[in-house]
Structures are given as structure tokens and as C-alpha cells.
Image (cartoon, rainbow over all chains, first blue to last red; front, side):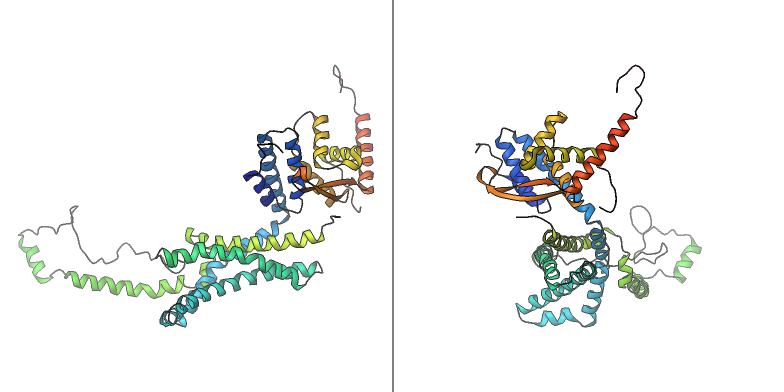
Length: 289
Length: 111
């Protein structure tokens, strides 16, 4: 054994990032060659090339799988919108809040987790069942393998992306379609009337026709302006909410927040299906032990 | 094989190396054999990638040896050329020889 043996990061990367059942033999080959006098740089280069080749090969093989995961993740904002609507409809948040601790948190988290697990597993079943059926291998075992593969990633991502900001950083989870962007027309009646660059009320001159006009038409008070503005906002609200709370509108939502919401769903579905496909392939692979 | 597909340059080299090495054909000697004849460094990962392609085409088969301490407890993976692989090598050789044989010698330079 050499004193500068590459036991660290490079070997770990090789064993964990090179997909497929052969990375053990490859790791052994690299170590054998290294012990015959190769440099550490050579070892690192070999590891990186093996990772790039392995990942690109697997990506080509699982192109359909990646496309499906991306398509399913596109539906995630619509699913979350649907959840938010049903939470609102059945007044679930208030019901959970009325429960004693820790049941309030358990129910809240449990509801969201169960709903999202249902969404992810439905997607996986939609992909796996036809494929296993076509391969004449529709059994519970590979299906269960895929579902099990989704759990650790699901819990880790959920904890990082949802629970952490919600309960520990004190920030509400801002689902994309939940906060509609309201655009005001240019001629929106504002609550405060300002003139001039300084924002001060303009000095009204002593010209008599203007004075008379002002006396006949006194300017509305600030309270009246605020009321008018609130009436106007209230008039806008129904149409805005109808547009953005619709789950179908959330499917085509391509704002950054919507894309960020899709990302964990994409990663979970992809890793779970990838894991299931790899297990299925390795079982079918002809390796004579 | 139902369809005829010709071997790529690297795949052909690997098949020839596997044939030449016989019982001792695994990652390290195959890479060294290629390095010796090509005169440049060969990535073991690319050798494995090509061997996997060949195996999926049914041109080579593989078997695992026993784990050894000098390899960090990892087993060697031995490769063998199948009958279909041998046929493919002969076919590629026949086509290449024919093409080389029909190539005219260019004026002023030897090919």
C-alpha cells in the first residue's frame, strides 16, 4: 500500500457517482494501476472521466424517464394550488391551529406530506406500471423498490425546502400561484394626491376663478381617497383571484418561484424512477458471479 | 444477430485486445495493451464504457473473479469475446482489408 493512497474524496465519488453495477470492478482496476506507480493526478483524471462517461451514458439510456419526471414536475404548482384551495375550502388551517400541540404541527405537516407523497407516487406508478407491464415484469417488488427509493430524497428535500422556512425561519411558504401579481392600470385612483417633485401640496394662487372653482369643488379628503382606492382594489379582486387560483393556470406558470417549486418534485421523481430502473436493470444484467 | 452493424475503431481495438489477452482480459491489462499500441494514455472509464456497449450487443461476456486485497477488496471483471464477437471482428477485418486493398496509391506519397 502506498502512503499517498487515494482513499478520500476521489474514491468516494467513484463508488457513488458512477452509475451501474460495474463501478466496483472499475474502482479496483484504478487502485491496482495506482499501486503500480501511477500519480494521484492520473487517478483523479480517471475518476472524473469515469463519472462523466457513466452519467452521460445513463442519461442517454434514461432520456424518456427524465422527460417524464420533468413533465410530471410541471404539474406540481397546479397540485399545490389544488391543495391550497381545498385547505381554504375545508378551513383546514384553522382546524389544525385549534388542535393542541404537537397535534397541530403533526396534522399540518402530515397533511402536506401525505398529499405530496400521493402526487409523487401517482406519477411513479403512471410511469412504472406501463413499463413493467411491457417488460412482462409487473410485480409488486420492483414497484415497491421505486417507492422506497423516493422516501429518503422526499423527506430530505421536504425538510430542507418546506419545513425549514415554514417553522424555523418564520417565513411562510410562498407558493407561486398563491400570491397573485396584481397589475394596476395607469389611471388607478390613488389615495394621495401629490404635486411637484417635493411631494408638497401646491400653493394655490389667489386668482379668483380658481378660488371660486375650489370653493365649489372642494378636494376630497385623504380618507375619502383611501376609501375610493380600497373600493377600486375590491372591484379588481374577484377577477384576479379567479384567474390565478385556478390549478390549470398554475401549469403554465413559468415564473422563477414556480420553477423553484417544481425542482424538488423533479428531483424526487427522477431519483426514485432512476433507482427503480437501475435495480430492474441490474437484476436482468448477465453477470456471472 | 438480426442486424449487421460494424464496429467502431475503439471497439475493434478493445475486441482485439481482449482476444489477445485471453484469460487475463480485465480492465487494467486491456487499458495497458491499448496504451502500448496507440502510444497515448487511455482512460479506464472509456474502456469500460466501450466494453458495456459491446456486452449489450452480445459481442463480449463478463464474469467476476475473487476480491483481492491489492485491489482494495474489489473483484476483477474478466471479459471474453463471444462467438458473435469473433464473427464481427472477422467481418470488420474483411471489409477493411477490401477497402484498403482497393485504395489507389497516391502520387508522391505512400499510404
